[in-house]
Image (cartoon, rainbow, N blue to C red; front, side, top):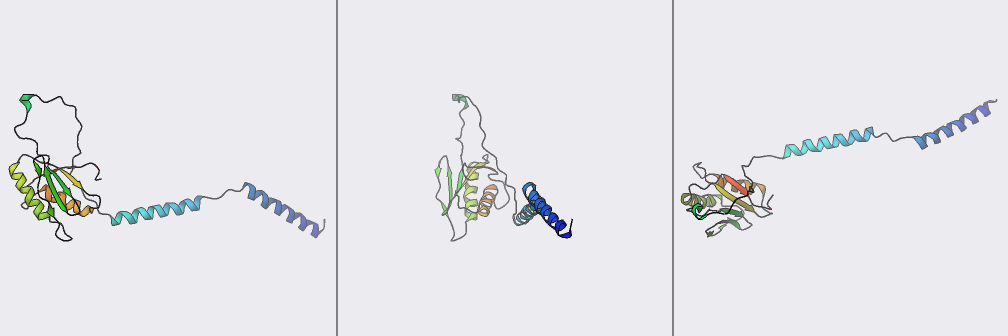
Length: 172
């Protein structure tokens, strides 16, 4: 064989080999998996540093089976069923006895002191009551929710008022 023939055979074998590799070749996914894993870890790490977490003591409503109340078991006082609602215009305090006048917002700020004062008046009439239902509009900021729960929980002197908070359905 001459040099020209050897070169022609090598070119033909090389072309056939490349075509075979293209048909059976696999894509190497390891570099792409490394990149995706690093991006996910970076996003998780950067998100966690910007979030602040807090604990809110709350009890969920319970479901129970009970028999009908007899005439002997009727309570002396009806239950309070206190509900505090945070709306765009201010606070609304309601109970089984009715609805109190709303506490309006002070411009862009909320009047948490007035809310605590009103709840202190209610606590004086119902000293044994510790439960209150909390409700908020969907546009209320998380910070306002937490400050409202703090205003419900204890008065200015640190005395507990309504520490057992029950979230109303649909606010979470």
